Every structure is written in C-alpha cells, then in structure tokens.
Image (cartoon, rainbow, N blue to C red; front, side, top):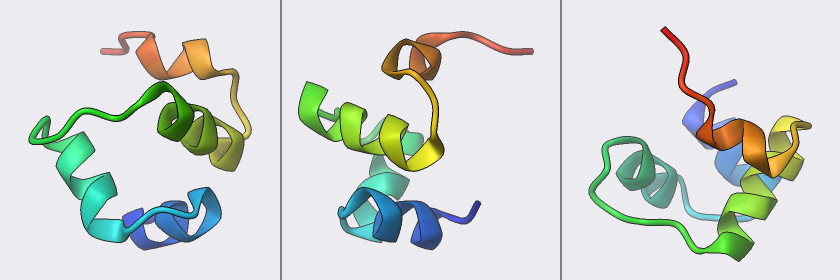
Length: 51
C-alpha cells in the first residue's frame, strides 16, 4: 500500500504519513487507530518490531 493510499484510507494527509514514517512527526493515539484500521491490523501491531 502506498503512502497516498494509506492516507486516503486513514483520512489523513499524505505528507503527514510521510512525516510519521520518517520520524519527523508523532501521531496521536487517534491517528494511530485510524492508520491501524486502514491497514486492517490491531493498533498494537503498529508497535511490533520486524527485521
């Protein structure tokens, strides 16, 4: 999923998604919940490290 698609699905600006991804901005709990919903994952999954 692209940043643009995620932003649209989460109802946030694409540049905001980019800033979160680059750690230039922090997301509120509400925004994290919107992003998790858009990704069809539980909010806690956004905090799992992978690699």
